Amino acid sequence: MPPTGGAGGKREADLIYEVVGWNRRANLGVVSSSSAGFKLPNGADRSPDAAWVSQDRWDSLTPQQQRRFPPLAPDFVIELRSETDAIESLRAKMQEYLENGVRLGWLINPQDRQVEICRLGEPVELLAAPASLSREAVLPGFVLELSRIF
Image (cartoon, rainbow, N blue to C red; front, side, top):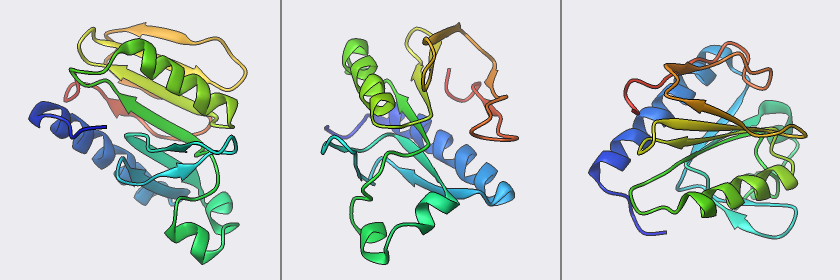
């Protein structure tokens, strides 16, 4: 995908900052940005805008696997819709993540001020203009304030 514009880059940086801050306090895993790729079980290479992998799953990888595209689906992913992204293609990407073992995905759509919460084995939950996202078992104690995103 081509680079995002200035506003999209700022939003993505804000998301990464919040996930990294939570993870440093909780010390539960590894966070990566959109510059990191993952080799999903179906063979696809995917780079979510933000991803988190639990420490035990990360530690089960060899050092070589950690340096390359880790051969696993993250536990948690965020896709942030940019001005040029078609929402249907992002929804398909989120479905692919779930089919490959991602436990939780947030599709954040700043243009429509919506968030689609995708949980493994559950229907998609659509939130209109939420102030924050939290209370997820996959991310204990994490709260994402959306004021900088919307």
